[in-house]
Length: 181
Image (tube, rainbow, N blue to C red; front, top):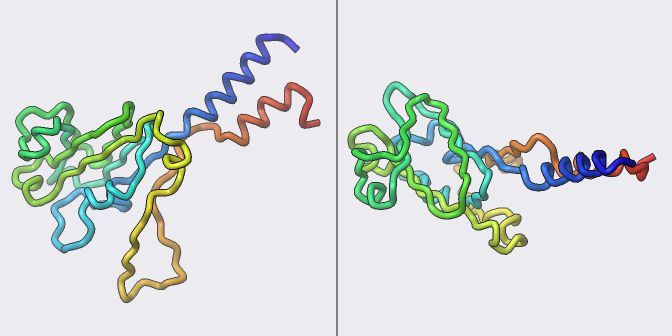
């Protein structure tokens, strides 16, 4: 077998192993990027129980006619200061890839919304973080409403966005080597 074929197979395998970022819906459901009118879970409570990794993408679904997302520095997050955002989005379907470890800060771009709780802090795990902990699901405290059907599944709204998964990568590696015949 040619060394080129072996190299291609190894590249496919590594692509499958390391490109497993997820698309994560902010708040776990559509239209959570808004000023909450109830005492339901805050976005930061949701963020605190969700494990974020490098390569994950945050997805905001919100009404673009009356809201926006600003990525800001920590000091601007703390003060709800909209004057110097690092980036701003107003499309109603905002996607932001988390390309590094550490904290990310987001606030609403609309007057008064951040002050009323429409803000989000996300902490991305370091690639050196203990893998067994990083790959484990985040702890979840679930409070069901009295009308919730206990048999109905709860949906976390996290999907893998990698184009190859580990199993396919392994098959693609072993097939040319004649190990799966």
